[in-house]
Image (cartoon, rainbow, N blue to C red; front, side):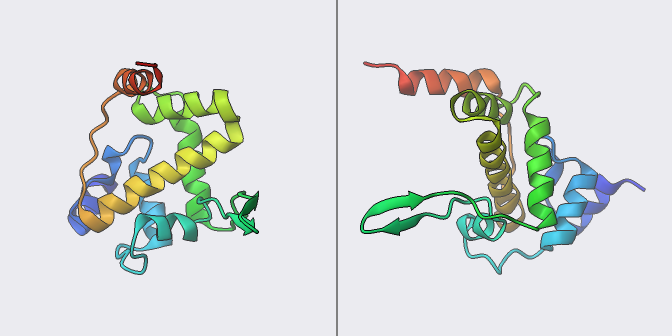
Length: 150
């Protein structure tokens, strides 16, 4: 049985366009989150439910902590697994991971990349977005243009 065409027939969108989100991983995510993501009004709510968004603890205007919460969600674990495998790819997501891993460490890079994949997953299912990867070179050129002084 071809899982990719079966998922496309049920959902009407191709989730495997998102890099490192293969047919079996997409099927497992659908099993965990469902096909109707209307329970979450925005992608921010969805990533917060997955415990992939930072939880800012603020007291007196001072940020005390901004760690992400621990999660026992299989969906979050699957997204983190996809994030670790995307690190070795020549895609914009891979370039994002590598840049963040150098700057902030691998653990934070995995969480941030998993959050980015979750947003792509949410937007694809909820709004029918099609993902086209611009490539690692395009990502690195845009970052260099933003960070260079004028």
